[in-house]
Length: 566
Image (cartoon, rainbow, N blue to C red; front, side):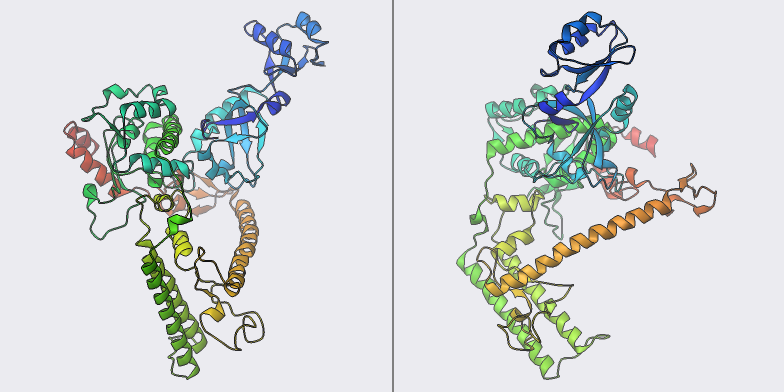
């Protein structure tokens, strides 16, 4: 549910009426408690049980309500229904890391399923294809207070594994933000105010659109996004869509991939996965570290609302026509694939006639396989590149999704368009099947491209029966590998937990066991806590230099502050 906060969990009313929280009756909340009892077990928010001062538990029924209300006095405990704002623990198994169990605030909603903000899916590794989750309700004030300060979702935006955000925008949030902030994205004042209203930007006390200096009547998407940013935020980075040119044009970038935020205003660049996506969000990372988790939570809630509103205004649609390329491009791809298959035939001929030279430390068979894999790998890459030249971000939303990091990759799109490529089993071509051949459709000991699992077709054109069979073999290996890897990593974690459970880090950085024996002179050999690191590095010097350069260019910048820092 993208309309609830990352800190919230949607709880069905049916569950809220079944699961209860003990509330102590006193002189100040007597009227509230009487209301719960009057509502009873069937009307939300009501109460299911009352516990008297002598410890006796009484079920609330229509018949017993009046009697309970007459005797109600301070000291009674009311087991009331869950209501909006209650703290609960939410968990998805397998619980593999700290963020598999976090505290959420209840939001009682109709229908029969738990609801979760999309941004909180990555830490739980949750999706909506039938996943089950568990909700645990705190029963004491101490546990609620502890959960609120230590376990709330906003406290876990940064992952302790690499120090970057693990909670962040996904899928439509990223496509929407790109479409909103790309060059030429403009809105009339009426449209802009509609977007601001729908994305709840006015709820933010810091935002007053009248204060935004605009040189023209229309609003740009960049101006709308700037409303979300703290006033003194300065940041420079390259967006996900960056094509890694040999010489970076920086602010003059043709595709607007060089992002510059100066004094809380998005001056250049587009917003995509690199801005506020999970695992890579640079803006989100900076806001958490410099402005705190509450401000980061507000930014994430508002920016994802804004992206969804943006996508509703601009529209996004995709179909197989997005993977359409001109006939002459298809002919070039087919020509290149034929050439590659001929190269493979020549390598096989050289091997069979004993004039193939073995690579150092390799047998002739290994040399042949390595060279064939190289030729066929290159065939897929080049045919993909030909297709990619015709798949541009202009009016092609499938490419927008792939390039911005919202979903899929350009490899997926080129496999749909040009060629699926070599299927591999155990890191090599397919060899097993019948005696001396993979399928009865080939000659014995045939070593050509098609006979060993090369898929010439694209997904859009469709695979022929032989290609389909080989493709299924490659896919099956993936399933088996997943099952085995899960068991291996689970056992590895168990052994590590056992081995490391007694280790402790002293204030000096010394790591010892419970006997005082020194394990490491400096924690991790560099003394850096990964949770406090900059995406795994102790510090990102390039980022610091860029931001200082931005500060120097700003006429309001006070260099004395930097001198004091030095």
